[in-house]
Length: 257
Image (cartoon, rainbow, N blue to C red; front, side, top):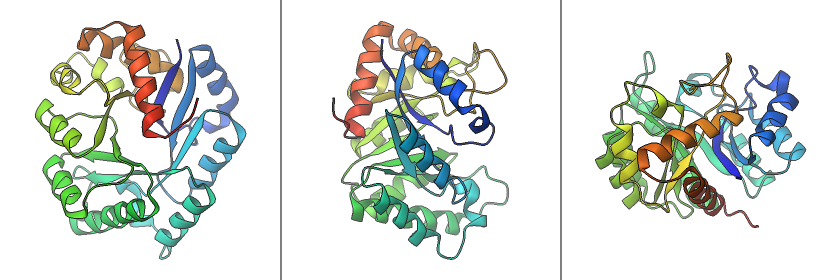
């Protein structure tokens, strides 16, 4: 069974020092492709290094809302430079997060819109983070307009109604280890509400450990545990969901073969 971890951060310095072992365990678990997402200027070079060192890696470069306060004056030009150097790369992880301590809503919106417009101009897929701001996210997406290559809403934690609204705007909906938590009551309805051609799975490694995982850090091999729970909640076999999510991720990233 081939698996696609559509969203992780294996460039994170908590995992990067043991990178080869992490990749070996991923391959043993059947993870043959993955989307690696840059979050800030400091980690974009490591994302590029990973993409050039291993087959089956789809890189993205973006400025996450957690890191916008530390951005350089020329961050957007630098981001565009990375995207030109990697013509198949996406824009992400970007987004809106109203749970960040002391967040500046106007600044978050401005940074997010700037990156969405860059993705529109360069025709790149977008990976989006959203916490406690689903209404704002939908409003900003409508303000910017359709994204030519679509978007991936990572670690989805909203309602089934929100999932359907986002799908109508061209989104793929990705589920992470958070669905394995015993107190997650929304996950089942949301997973069943997503059309079969828009559902994805991810680890968000090194964070969001599945509740049944072993170890201190999450890693791509654990996408099998996400698959197991998502298949149970959706009421289909793991084999079928693995096929659907792999096919959907390949389509989102425009990968061949």
